[in-house]
Image (cartoon, rainbow, N blue to C red; front, side, top):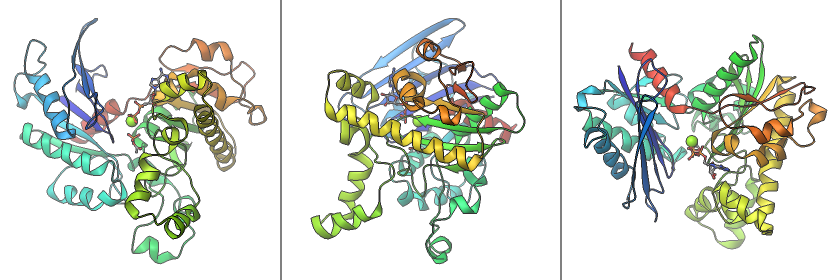
Length: 398
Ligand SMILES: Nc1ncnc2c1ncn2[C@@H]1O[C@H](COP(=O)(O)OP(=O)(O)O)[C@@H](O)[C@H]1O
Ligand SMILES: CC(=O)OP(=O)(O)O
Ligand SMILES: [Mg+2]
């Protein structure tokens, strides 16, 4: 069964095509800088030990345009991987916000699309784009099953004391105001890998997903019990362009004393803050270079980023009442050795002690970068949201 997975983020789109249940993809790719200068597509076809890479640098106006170009790459030219749209049995879609309705992979119907649409205002950078990709895929693969896998699903096990905010009941009951949590597919995938690696039944793990969006989850015996993103994907850690936690009084202040509108506030906290706002770029690689050149803003942004993660490690070690492992994953977590080192510095009180050499030597796969004396394992585990989505679709349809 061929399953195509589409992982659409705020400014990028990742995809992989799997012949399930095989884990290695037939092809995979990335569309980046959608709607801004410098758009590109990198498409890789795997054939045994060989790889064939196609790169395109035409301007890509939006996600629908990007996806249409990707679908052409799958079906046209020398590197075509399918001969007809009907070769795709199912398309798995990452959908960021599923509210309280969805706790597992879901076959997409008109009713499901309505629910996704209802949640637009709660995930404005993500859900509209996710729905657009569903519509393009329905048009291109009219006979394929379309399946949604929600970022929020893994967090449906969070207990009330962690998912409720201390505001009157009616705001939860009438407006659905609660913690939903995001990046659940990634937290689920890496925590399962960690549990297998630890070979331990009763496990206490903190997963740290550091991509463009960043979040952490406390995972007890394989279940999410708390997470740093909340009602929307804006709270918690410092991110590429998002501020993470901020005192709501700042919002009142900017409205009252600086005349800010709703749109201006949303743009400020979603698109102009985080590494970009403090350090001058949303891309951690740029921040690393700027900091090495001695730029104060970049240095400060790295300090804020690492400090916030450290603070959540302390909080989650407390609510888990113990800790077996912390897991670094996603773009920054997997690739940025200095950030991992900065986070783990001076955490020996919690039994977290890094082996500096192993951390520097990390070059892929699942690895333990803790010292022999460390009570807590420090693991680096590459995430694979696309495979996890394909696996869940396969489970639903098989
Ligand atoms: N070699 C690297 N060193 C440091 N940061 C990196 C490296 N490679 C990627 N990143 C960072 O990873 C982030 C993107 O992570 P990713 O998981 O792809 O995000 P998303 O899925 O949210 O688009 C960017 O900030 C990028 O700079
Ligand atoms: C939920 C979220 O923040 O996703 P991303 O990291 O893809 O922007
Ligand atoms: Mg991502």
